[in-house]
Image 1 (cartoon, rainbow, N blue to C red):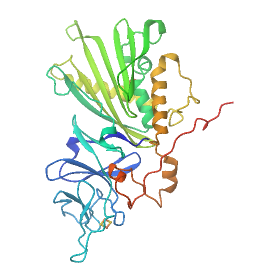
Image 2: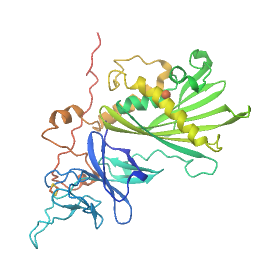
Image 3: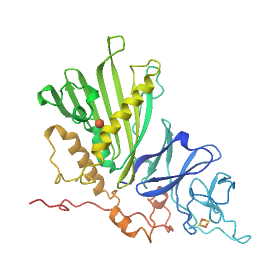
Image 4: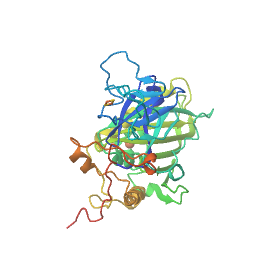
Length: 375
Ligand code: FES
Ligand SMILES: [Fe+2]
C-alpha cells in the first residue's frame, strides 16, 4: 500500500450531516462536512487520548458537528477541517489550547459523486492529478457507478482491471469470440502514452479495439470500441469506458469504485441491465482473484511468469518499484507488529512545516530486489 496518492474514501451520497468513519491504507479516517457543506478528511484518532472522532457516541442525540468542527465523543474536543483543535471544553478559563492539539488533515476533492482524499504529505504542485472522466455530464453518455469490496490486495485488483486476456476464460458472456484463445487473433502493444504517472496498452482484434491503462498506484481505466447486438436484431457500434478508483482498505481487502460510461444502449432500463452485467463480471472476477497467491504480486517477477503480451503488468510493477524507491510504500508488517501499542498516522502536508505531532508517521520502506530468491 502506498501513501501519496488520491483514494476514494466514500460516495458523496454517504456523507450527510453526521461524521463518517472510513478505513484506507490500514488506517482510520473521519469524513465530515463543514458549515459550507465542504467535505473534510482527518486522521480519526483524537490527539487527546485516542478517541475515535468518527466513532460511536453513546450519549445519544448530542451534535457531532459543532461550528464546522467534528467533536470527539470522549471529552468533546473540537477539530476544524484543517485538523486544529478549536475547543477543549475542560480547559480552565483563559488557558491556551496546546499547539500539539491537532490531527492530520488531508486534501479532499469531491468529484464524479465520489469523495477523494490525498493520503500523503506532498505539496499540491507535486501531487498526481485524479484520473479524469471527460464523459461525466456529457449528453450522449450515460454513467453507472459500481462499488465492489473484495478480500484481495489492491494491486491484485488493479492488475485484474487491466488484464484483458482473462476475459474470455472468466466471463463467458462477454462474447469475445476466441480473441485470446488464439494469440494470432489479436495484437497487443504498449503505446507511448503521455501520462507520466502511467502507461497505455492497446489490443486490437477483428471486432474490438481495447485501450487499457493505469494512472498512479491505484487508478486504472479501459476504453472499448465495439459492436453490440440490439434487441431488434441489428447491431449498434459504440464505446464503453471504464474508470476504476481502487482503495486499499488494508493489506488484505480492497474497495473498487468503478464508473462505467457508455454512448450506446441508452434506452429505458439500460442502466439496470449494465449494472446486472457488471455485477456478474465482478463476481466472476472475485472468486478467482481472491484466491491468487501470494496476496501481493512480487514487484520483481520472481513468483510468477509474465508473458510478452502482459507488458502492462510489467510496466505497472515497474512503476510501483519507482514509488517504493521514493519511500511511499507502507511497511505493513511493522504496522501490524505494533498495532496493540502504537497507532500511526499517514503524514499530511502540514507535517512538512509543522513539527511535533502526537501520532508518529506511518513507517514506510523500500522493497529490496533480493527480498525473494529463486533456485
Ligand atoms: S479522547 Fe478525544 S477528547 Fe478526550
Ligand atoms: Fe474480469
